[in-house]
Amino acid sequence: MYFRMAKRMMLETDKRLLWKLFWNMGVKGLRSVQLHKRRLKRGEFFPPYLYISIINSCNLRCQGCWVDVAHKQNRIEVDALNRMINEAKEVGNSFFGLLGGEPLMHKGLFDVLEAHPDAYFQVFTNGHFITDEVAKRFRKLGNVTPLISVEGSEVVSDQRRGKAGVLNATMQGLQNCLNNKVMTGVCTSLCQTNYEDLLTEAWVDRLIDMGVMYTWYHIYRPVGPEPCPDLALTPEQQRAARQFVVDMRCKKPIIVIDAYYDADGNALCPAATGFTHHINPWGDIEPCPIIQFATDSIHDEKPLVETFNNSEFLTDFRAVAASATRGCIALERPDLIQKLVQAHDAKDSTARHTAITELQAAGHHPSQYSPDLVPVPERSWAYRIAKKIAFHDYGVYQTHFDPASWQDPRLSSDAPKPNPEEPNLYQIGQ
Image (tube, rainbow, N blue to C red):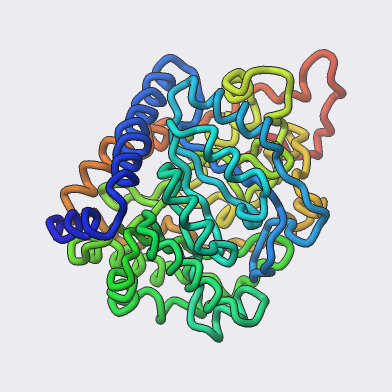
């Protein structure tokens, strides 16, 4: 299988793009993780991988979307993006995820990609704006991989994404990338309407036949103003999805990515472990894309490394999230997020300004962590080694958060005294 994968890469992808992938994302990306580990030992913090939502606008209206795609367009300007990426590169980062909305609607996207040939970018896109000309620009740059979202059959795609003809437009954008030998991936947010169609060997085989080099299975998160909880997977389905991913890694010549498990099959949250945080289109720094509260911004008049090091909100989020669950705190314990927000007076970082109301109305949903189900460890030696080195919990789940050691910022001498009936972090977990 490994030989077949290597053969596919050599024959189906531009060799210069493979070198960019190997050096900018592979070698330098691994170095960024090692630097992250060293920082943690010194009591410092800067995530080795940043998700950056560069624009809120999108041409689609997906079920369960938490982004304010219908609101007035807002984007991070090129100068601010370049400044942020340069500051991240100064501490060793080289790999960035660019999201939206739809990132290809940002008119300055290629200016940013061209300004950082020493970095590697994963662009999360629906593919509708990837013309042959755009794909040729991706190939010329070499430092970008489009990750194109496919959400089901033609009927399901139209239903999930709020528009007719979605799948055909997506597949055309995908084909334009493949025709130009661009390193291309396909991602799917697994939910009840696409689970049986896309979590199959037949679908993986089709991707391989087309020339797709990697696929990424996310798990649908019922969050946002219209969460559509009926689409969420059961714990048993999530475990079956994990088993499928592990099996395909040993069987198919395609890279299969997941973001929720370590080498031994233990669940983890990349935000709780500090592997990544998220910057929204207004420049606010959030724990992750679906937790839309912030106390810090990339536009603050201080270095980004100082912002991350000194953010009490992000520090306490990681501690509370890791102490509450190995899964997703947004799904399992939205009440804890609400208490964190209140304790830090974190602002609602959405344009709709209903995030608190959404938290209050949110139900408790299963996530990747299910203590009643036996973990599924990696079978592939390559994935086991990679995860042991770069993608694990960094020890956060072995260190339990002690609320008594945390100082509520509202207790400072110049702050108003808290209402004793109002929840704070001393009560979290009780």
